Amino acid sequence: MTTCRKLNLAPERMIRNWTFGVIIIIVVGLVSLLWGSECLGQDSSYTPGWLAKEMEKSSSREFPFLNEWANSPAVINNAEFELLRMITLTNSEGYLTDDLIKIGLSAHWGNFDTCLTIIVGTSPQSHFKDHYLGNGRFDLSDRELRHVFEDAAKEIHRMFLPLFQKMSCQSDMIIEIYYRGFDVGTYYNGEFKLAGE
Image (cartoon, rainbow, N blue to C red; front, side):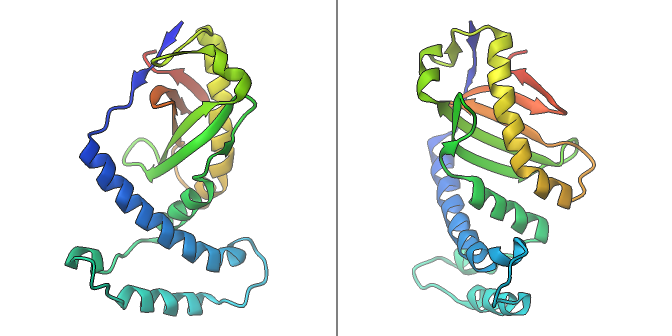
């Protein structure tokens, strides 16, 4: 039987992060819808110059219902923009593996030892629900549990690999996987370690 750690975030921080995250996702989603066909190599009537003009217009616009900080312009580099675009494209509930469903995803550029950290929330496919005992515990052996979540991590790794390679990172990405809010483990350099190992 395996036990996982509970993800513990202060409610105020969760609300603040959630609100900021929703605003960023909406803005990036709109921009990537307009620009997405270019990134996929398809013909588009929009040019990077047009996009730059639109972004300049939108960044100079002020909203009277927002405070000064919210109306100040934001400057991000291409790596941050591409990461936000990838989060926008992949942060939806859906099939991950035969055993797991992806219910949420977040990512950020690393600091020293890693290039990219991806945090994934999961829940069970219908047949896998019986293996969950509650409170981060499963009725599977560590080896079986590691295999289930390693497959999920490899799928997330595959989804983000084009972005990761585009940035020419010198280190691998870390993928942290949670199951119903409990930390299950971390995938790094092709190996999945259960929480507490």
